[in-house]
Amino acid sequence: MDQLTARELRDKIAAGQISSAQVTEAIFDLIEQRDTNIGAYISTMRESALAQAADVDKRIAAGQPVGTLAGVPIAIKDNMCTKGHATTCASKILQNFVPPYDACVVEKLKAADAVIVGKCNLDEFAMGSSTENSGLKQTRNPWNTNCVPGGSSGGSAAAVAAELCYAALGSDTGGSIRQPAGFCGVVGLKPTYGRVSRYGLVAYGSSLDQIGPITNNVTDAALMLNVIAGHDERDSTSISEETAALSDYLADIDKPLENLKIGVAKEFWQVEGLHNDVEQAVRAALKTYEQLGAQLVDVSLPHLEYAIATYYLIATAEASSNLARYDGVHYGHRTAEPKDYIDVYNSSRAEGFGEEVKRRIMLGTYALSSGYYDAYYLKALKVRNLIRQDFNQAFERVDCLMCPVSPEPAFEIGSKVNDPLTMYLSDIYTIAVNLAGIPGISIPCGFSENNLPIGLQIISGNFSEDKLLRIARMYEQQTDWHQRKPSF
Ligand code: GLN
Image (cartoon, rainbow, N blue to C red):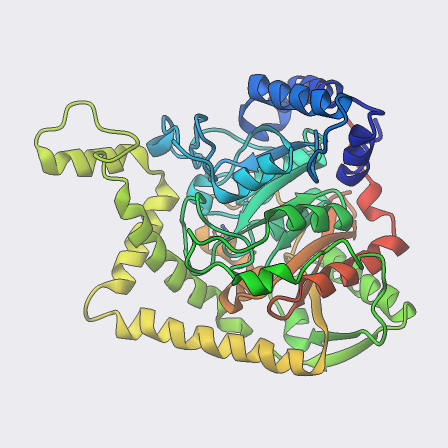
């Protein structure tokens, strides 16, 4: 089946040519057929989705105005709160947690009349690169079900690739939107830190976390960003109202950028383990841009090699603090027969958290402990600044940077689970972007010999998503990678 884009679907629904109820039913049929094998969803919301769809259809029939995403089925990563519907973070500790409120992004989707289909699988608390750290289920890559979908937003990316929704939300702390999008052959956008409110996003690394769209194409990413971006007084790191007011990402999306200067850092090609198929596909994409009139400029990011070490100090430090709230008292899992009140904490946490989460809490607690704080945490903050400066210097000379999303295509399920360090290294191209707070997008740019998708990453300066999306769209207009779909 050839799926419409989210934008086309919305227009057809709004014009009364298709009913949202029909489209939503079709999505649930596909979920039933395909998701036992793919495992993209932790839970679905059939009843409320059909009610939302019916409401949109009714309003359209009555000639009333409808929102930007009227009737379009959307999926949400299960670390964003949905009022009255379980939000698990793929963790046993939150398995029975039902939030009494919606995350800001969920409110915005509802206000835009989107139909919310369900909650997608992830690595527990968004900690991972393959969705194998989920405490609840396995997700498989729709292109090859022996392979991982990437992570941590693996469920969201797999749902979009397998046509089990028209667009999804993910969160990205070190690459968790862009890398799974790359592995599944779809588009993933991590906006500038602060562009999208984190209110109601379960915190992992608060100074790095950012919500963004996973879609079938660049135009739909712009459409989704239009809906979810903006100031929110409930998130103190959210952008100001003035900055928020300036942007309509769809307005100029089809306008190519003239005199485009693309920075290519020599460090990008020196990454250990860079797969030949990935390098070839990215170099070919750069050629396509040159044919479109862009100029390639050599730049340098001398501190890139420290990005992973820096990230794993800062992210784990923040995680150890953020995850202290799961104590068996306030919410989530509580151990059945505690010996005493200390044991409520100890056993609830021991039973509720998975291996990787425990590893990170210990790493972070260590990095923050007195005597080590200066040597590790404070040092990491200083290196973070140097990485930020590297990018700023590059953006004085170029409009954007281009590089792979990940050193290799999707890997086999189980092949890296016993070696966390190798797993951590697979984020080398995405992690520095979060440390700098800048936006990055992953778009499909080819396939490996084994027919697995390859992603091109485009990175630009703070608050330049409009430009970033236009640059990405230039490539998409010239190529058809984004139109290829896995077969079922
Ligand atoms: N893979 C990285 C990690 O394990 C990034 C995860 C993310 O972006 N949430 O932390």
